[in-house]
Length: 456
Image (spheres, rainbow, N blue to C red):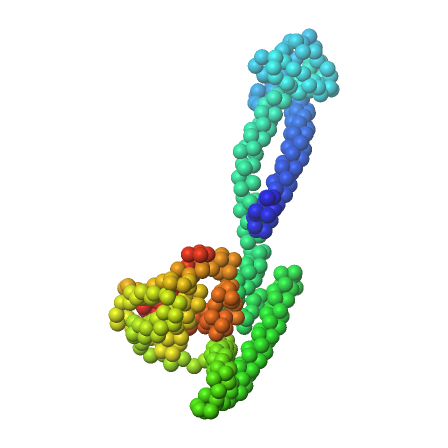
């Protein structure tokens, strides 16, 4: 796995920006120090020439006496000045400690010499003094001292360089975060749409002409198209379900009428009974599909009243026991009495019944089902557990999809694959959440939680 796949885009851009800025700063410092070193050397030599030239104004000869200005002893610009006669004897001035005084004079020549371990620039100049003759002026400046100052600056730069890198990283992160803020908004909006299935949401980044704004507008256009397609599908499902209810009702009525006739032979009666049973299953599926379709469109009306969840679960459990006995399944109840919650009675009964039917359909012969309902200070918990065939990890994420069946060959022929979709929606509209855990061959557990103070 490469770092490009591990790091986020924000981290990668920050890293690239930091590396780039570090390289630029490093290159700038190298160039700066190279140029500065040369500039310092040139500046030192220029000051040396100037001080030697100024020294001619600081010595006079009057009344057969040489007179020297005290400025010659001052270290202006770190330049040592000293005056000699033509015989090389020191007349006045100051020389650096440890400097080799035997160094030969070279009139008008600026040169570098090494005395001991110190490097110097020397400037010699002869100056004819009226009434006295020629005097020799020597200026000396330490190159090593100048370079020492430069090295101090260099060390300081090395010390602050990591701070520059850190500052570059922080600035890069801030700029990247600001630049990618629209991308985060796009991601958060799309994830929210995915979780809530609310295709009416839009990103709405606003006006902009760069690629990110173009991407956001493209997403908004796509979402609008998807929403329109879903609405058409929902309307079609609702219309079809509604239109099918009438012929289904007619078929059931005709079946009832035929079964009431006493002159039907046994074979015909069984065939009519089978048609009735299949039509009842189809009617139940259409009813559930119509409810879900109306729920998708926000048109399903709920009658929210205070309900005794304990009684509703006991009623549905007793009804489910009759069907469970056909497979030899034993149902165990652990229902805390008088648990109250605001809700739609019909939907809550349908929710319990769908979960119990699901446990029976996928339960094993002579198996078990455990029904639990309890309340704490802040929440109501309902658990329906079985020791049936279980659900594979791959299928767990699909069981809430409409018409999906884990194992159609093992489920009831009356199953439509809409039961768990209906359960999830009912739990949602009652302000709760539902989770499932399962192991193949060991059984499945559905857990529902409602918050006591949840306002619907």
